[in-house]
Image 1 (cartoon, rainbow, N blue to C red):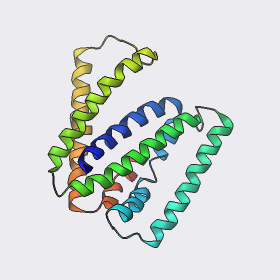
Image 2 (cartoon, helix red, strand yellow):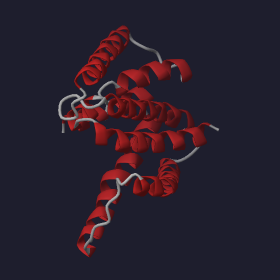
Image 3 (spheres, one colour):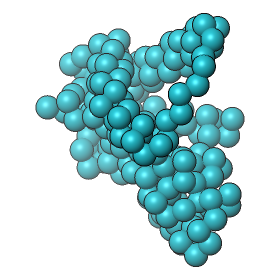
Image 4 (tube, rainbow, N blue to C red):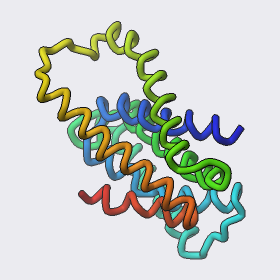
Length: 193
């Protein structure tokens, strides 16, 4: 059961972020994922009985205050170039919650399934959900057909294989060999880059 929920959580992360980033700034989109480790620590404490340190609790409170400031600023300004729009920030925040929940659920099932099997199902389910949502994107006018060269297609395939599949596989290995909290710290250097 946790495996099925987990697969939909990773799909939710990608979909919420993809739709949310259209209505917020890239900076806010990336900074919104900074509290991942703290949220994972909190969820890990509740669902995995991983111990929460005092510093993690203080960090979680400070992170929530910062997220509230970003959300308030976006409601007040409605400027997509600075703090984004409320709907964009809410969608990105839902992506953050999906990703954090995915990490905790992955830790729970990592003793049952191999990292390669988990990664495989993540991508299959996300692909199917993406195909289901494609007509919605087309109807909303978000999708524009363009002429794509074979080099571009090969570039996208290699990007998907090496940056996405490899990252998720290594992330699953890290989750399996450590804790959900430790694995979630991987996002800190990625956010900076």
